[in-house]
Image (cartoon, rainbow, N blue to C red; front, side, top):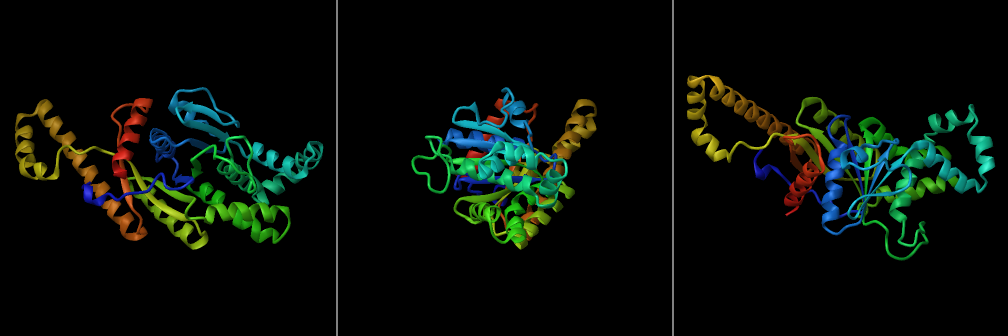
Amino acid sequence: MQSQQQSTIPLLDRRVLFVVGKGGVGKSVVTAAIGLFAASQGQRVCIAEMNGCESMSALLGCPPVGYSATSVADNMDAISITPEQATEEYLVRALRFRRLYELVFRNRYIEPFMNGILGLSDLTSAGKVMDLEWLREDGSYGPESTGPWRYDLVLVDCPSTGHGLALLQAAQTMMEVTGAGPLYNNSSMIHELLSDAEKTAVLLVTLAEEMPVAETLEAVTTLRDNLSISLAGVIMNAVPPKLAPASDIAAWWPEVAEQGSSLGGHAEAAVAHGEEILRRRLEARRHSERIQSQSRLPVIELPLLDTEISMDGLRALAAHLERCQA
């Protein structure tokens, strides 16, 4: 993929960035890399994993973080948000009486209704993200709180695309269902944060493959048609690195390929490997051009790591993101 096909995505310009994509495209890896990049620039970062996932502990080599924000690297905290804990925290705060919460909402008839029909768990999970954006150094949070922010950037590692979009739509849906009252008011504040293009954006992650790219483009359409939320761009993950500059490949690859094939053995295998990389990079270019043409969003690539994911690999991806911001 040529450098002119890459566009700048302002990764550090907002306070909240939702990372959305199909399962298996590497959302958590991308989220961790962005977090390390932001932290290296002096920003205080919180990674919020949704649905109780604990990917960050595995990626960053630290103990499970749980529902309380925990330091996982310099300038970087992480929290694992479970729908159950987010719902309990919100309702206990709203009802101001834990026994009433336990009596009413831990009822085997009412709980499925609230979470399934009204989508309360998605709403309260999004509300927890709002709390993190609100959070001040002194531990206070809310629209009336003042003082320095605890975090400069909240990165939300969303569930796979379908559930991720439902999470982003939860506040708007609840507003339409309720029309007034405490749930409406809380939903309105969440919706206001999501709609603030200076504070919040969605970053889509894909692979250079047909199905993830198609799902990414469908997500762009859904977000634009149904939500007033800013789209930052698309990251194409795990793209094979270049063999050499394009001009060099054009100048000497045919000769190298011919010689390798005639020699056989390891030389022929090396040529076959090089041709596979060239094919995959050509496919990545085609997918990138399709995304840019149909979505009108900037696309940048992250290289495929040649080792298992580790802190060194994540820092290499963070450094690559930094170069893409220049």
